[in-house]
View 1 (cartoon, rainbow, N blue to C red):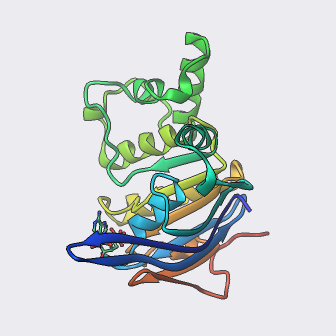
View 2: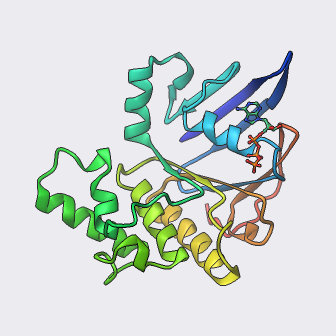
Length: 232
Ligand SMILES: Nc1ncnc2c1ncn2[C@@H]1O[C@H](COP(=O)(O)OP(=O)(O)OP(=O)(O)O)[C@@H](O)[C@H]1O
């Protein structure tokens, strides 16, 4: 499995008591699999992504990324693990409006250490993959919401991750653009054999997922049937 969360408990301090954001959550996603986590606001989806991305250490439980137990690593080792294995697509693209689409990728850590020509070629190629061929040199402000989300996805792929974690990718998009973004995430999952976790409160595009979990009050239940078109 590319990502395996086992029996995760995460609590936050809340005044004199605590809030249990993740209550014995387990989840496994393998290469080439798209897993959707569906849940209402406050159910724990962001907390799940934060633990899966190793940005927050859970109170207890195991986080294995591509076979490596993350909870026992030092901050420096965790940072290397994230860099080499995990891509994160944040809900807001957070693009720098004055930079072109290519530059948004070139500023990432992943692009360091290669020659300027190779970096540029890699960035242009990734942008073509996400459907922005011909728009690589437009500034963020000249791109539509759906196009900015595509740049966001391309940027998450710069490190050639094994695990792609995606936070509410369709939240700011209309139906057609939302469907296109979910189709793109499905294609990338298959083509690059990444384990993709998409958290969403949107029931509309679940048919793209191979498996669906439902989150409620910090508890996760996984549907027993495969709902998507995953042909493995
Ligand atoms: N930093 C924090 N301190 C205290 N409580 C928190 C913190 N972050 C989240 N919580 C609480 O943990 C629970 C899960 O929150 P989380 O943000 O993970 O849910 P969510 O499903 O992502 O919701 P949303 O879509 O609104 O972000 C909620 O009860 C929330 O209030």
